[in-house]
Structure formats: structure tokens, C-alpha cells
Length: 455
Image 1 (cartoon, one colour):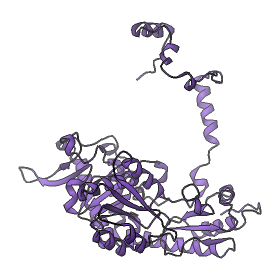
Image 2 (tube, rainbow, N blue to C red):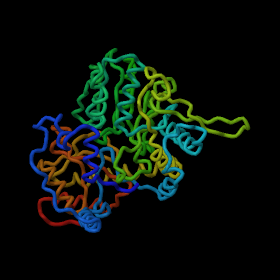
Image 3 (tube, rainbow, N blue to C red):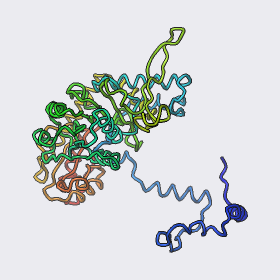
Image 4 (cartoon, rainbow, N blue to C red):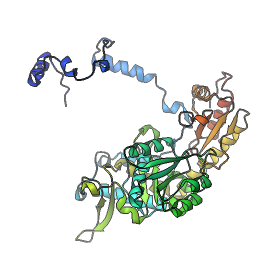
């Protein structure tokens, strides 16, 4: 479509059509204190060629992702993506298509969704998977709504401080205008204290949200949490790391009723930004409470395999009062990437990846804690991530210094946890080499010496 600008004659004709004297008159309904009173200090106009050159100069000031070594985590991780994922996902049949409203015209997409669901149920140990949601945070919030609907308890839910703070914020936003109260369970030791949980749970609680491993990378006592939760008649919602299941127990194995996850780790780079891929699976008795859609496999009249949308529980498909959610995407491209990734890696590949993350993160933590300045904030076992306490309480300066050496060394936690203002979260994936880890340790150890450290 060509770019069409408004000439003075065009503007005059449009103003006459709506009965206005000037463009400024269109802004009269906006209170004067909200209007910009000063003139915009804009530079002179540029030609297209000059503007292109200007943007290229600005872009050249950015640091390329390959120039820094990433130890960031907190929900977004620098995992390896096999080349086959990009090769398949880049096929035009996939990346130009959208939500399959007409099942008979979308057999390829529906097969991908079916295969995705099959892999997620096997991965999570749950009975049913939907065709995915926007991201992990919205999946957590949708799971809470599922739980209140299924239990018919609309008074309370329990979320621990060890749950990702952005998940907690999203849940609070979803529930803001509902009667459900969000009870926050303090986790001063980095994990849920089952005795504290047992003390606050009652027959008005619809669900407990457990993250395993949690936001701090610590491993929770999932069995005890599940037992306490379900003995109170509430549902257990488990937020899991898909790659951790290469070596950790699946949510279905410790009795979770609903399992959700951020699925970008399954074949989607950090650079995609977000939303990523919201994974959701559940017990089969909760299937009609599940948001989104479910693809199924059947046969046509000739006996050939075919795929259909078995369940569609949003208001565009059923009566509004019976809809479970207004979620209208299945993040099809990201679900495809996850499907290709899982089929490529297989159980052995996931196990090896998870073991590398575990071993390399443990090595990193041990090397950092050999420095007098650093210590682990929590004693609980960890997977892939851990929290480091800085004895000098100069986390921002420390991370800034590391960035100057070419390292994204971690995430400062003070923004979400004032009591952890002297701490930062470090994530170590299978991509990090021993040389990179050792160089990070040297960089952090010499952060105040102004001696540059490179890999």
C-alpha cells in the first residue's frame, strides 16, 4: 500500500466534513493540563536516504548479542536452538498462517497442534494439553481462574513469594475486579515452608500455585505442598521449567492438577522478546474448564486420518456465559517451534541438556562463592539458577562493571524483593562454556579494580 499524506486541501475537506474549524479544536475535550503546551523540539526533516543513514548510525551504537555472554534468567534463557527448528518454522506454509478457524482448511496446522499437545502431555505427565496460551504469566492467571471455577471457591488463592513476581502481578491483575483474594505466602528461606502453608490454607482456598524450580532456582518440596493443598480440597497449580523435566519429576508425578509453563525454552531464542508460548496441561476431569482450544485426531469417511478442533471454549464459539476465557490465540508458530525442538531433542537430548544446566550452574555457584565477597542467599538445592548475595551491597555497580567486560551477569532482585536488594539472580544454561564461566567469576571478583576482564 502506498504512503498517502494529507495535503492542506485534504485536511480542510475533512474538517468541514466533521464540522470542525481547526485540528486544534479536535483536542478541546482533553483537559488543558494534559495537553502539551510547549512546542516539540523536532530536528529539520530528512530525506528518505538521509533518514536511512541516520537510523543505521543509531543502530551501530547497539551492542550485538554475540558481543556479550548471557547469564540472565528469571523466565527468559539463552538456550541452544537446533538449526532444524528455524528451517521448519520458516516454511511459508507455517509462518503466514493464522488461527485455524476452519478446521477442514487447516489440516497442517491442526496436525502440528495435535502433535504439540501430545508431546506436552508426555513431557508434563498430565492427561490433557490445550493448544497453548500467550505466555507463562497469562497461563498462570488462566489456571487460577480454572481452579476457582472447578472448585467453586472464589474467596482465596495462595501464591508464594518464590513464584515469579511477574506471574504474581499478572494473577493480581486478572483478579483485581473479582472477589478472589490473593494470599501471599512468605518464603524467607527461598522455598515454601509446608508448615506455614498448612497454617494459612482453609476450605475457602481454591488453589495453591507452586513454581518448580521456583523463581530463585530453588527446588521446592512438591510432594508435601501437593499433599497439604489437596487435603484442604484445593487444586495444585504447578509452574514448571520444561527443560528441567529432563532430570526432575514431572508435575503429574507429584500430583499437580494443572501444570503451566513458559515454553520459549523449547526452541525459541531470547531475541523473540514476547509473548512467547504459554503451556497449559491438566487432569482430564478439568478439560472443560480449560481455556483456548484442543485439537483432536479422527478419520474421515474414507478412513484417512484427519484433524479437527475437538474443543473450543471461548465466547466466539459458544454462549458467552459458558466461555472459559476470551483467549483467542494458540501461539501457533511458537507451538510449532516447540514441537520441532522436542521431536529433535527427544528424551535423551532433554536429559543431557538438563544435566549440563545443572552441572554448569553448580560449578558457577561454587566458583563465585570461593570469592570472599559472594555467598549463596539460600541453602536449598537449585537447578540452572541461583541467587548470589553481594557482601558489599553494590549489586547495580557490580552488574554494570560486568557488562563493561562483556557479561550480562544476572538480574538485580531489589526491584521485586527489597529484602534481597544485595542479591542478584544468575542463570547458567548448556551454552555457557567453562572459559566463559571462569571469565565471569574473574570479572565479578575484580569489579572494583577497574581491570578489564575478557573471555
